[in-house]
Length: 131
Image (cartoon, rainbow, N blue to C red; front, side):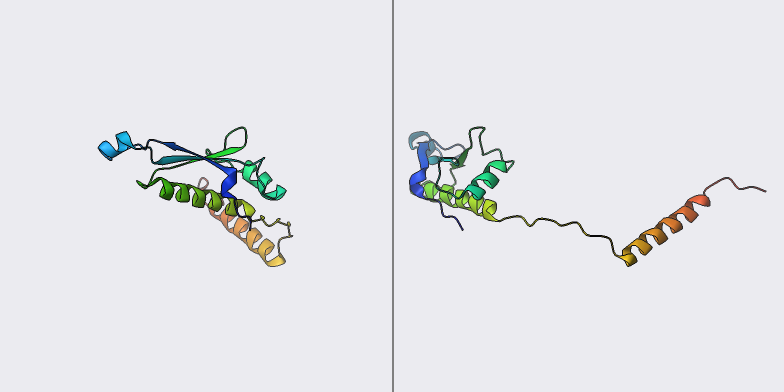
């Protein structure tokens, strides 16, 4: 399991959106977290799988951008962004199992052919009735 070094994440404080009254207009407590995958200390396999993810949070340059604004505290939002980034890296750390194609069993082949025969009989009954 690869752990993200917080020093590799660039945080910038921004103003949060949504309701909050005067506090939202005065205080910059939301956080943009930027994590450059290519320049990070993650293992090469995890980097490849991270960049291969089809995620809108990953830019063309390979930078993951997360926005955290759930809390009114800047530190809490930083922790939230780090946890979400760690969850993304943990997801990419799981190596997918390679599927090895196998032959269908004899029983499954017989069941398939039997189902085809039955449906063919039903369709044959749908034709015109001859007298």
